[in-house]
Image (cartoon, rainbow, N blue to C red; front, side, top):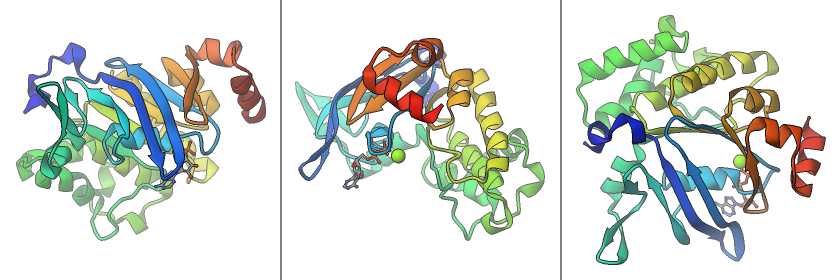
Length: 262
Ligand code: ADP
Ligand code: MG
């Protein structure tokens, strides 16, 4: 599998080139260019409707592109190059590629009829064809890592929102992903549960996993991100270090946005 063959130093590169995406007449992504380096933590900020979720969804090919390319390490997502042409990959190849990209959603999206442990081992066994004993051991280790060792047999309805989201993070990590995408991972949580989820993400950032995090938690973005990307109306308007973007934003729309949310 290419996961094992990819040298660690380049594992987790995401290269987004000239990406366009429309829904009907509405162009939601307007030539996005963005390179995320291995091990980098990128926070994406921007007003509602600016295209942040759509951009995340294009990275793991949950949305097809209308133009441009997205490469994760050495693979084009959804396509292969033959001659000088791009050819669409078949569904099973897209599913295999998708297992390289972990995704954590706002509303957790756990399978309600599966225990925490079974939620975590489902995709590694069925989508990656890995051995159940190996995957179970790894899942238990991940549950320990997110502070839920004792919840392996609990069902989602028996867990708080913060605990469900930590299971969802463990589930994403169980795939040994090259990159993990977070779409507003704390937006659905009661305020007192936000911290426990952010602490888990902070731990991943320290471990050198490539992370792309859409968030409205400005303090968290400032602390954890290597780079902050500001999107508006389908464009990347401005990007820089947290000190640059929060300290001296250059673009009018970045300034307006930050003045409202901070
Ligand atoms: P954000 O995450 O920044 O709030 P989204 O990427 O969710 O923005 O949405 C960007 C725009 O695309 C919005 O106007 C939204 O209504 C529209 N949109 C998103 N998904 C779809 C879809 N599946 N069909 C039609 N329009 C969509
Ligand atoms: Mg969104």
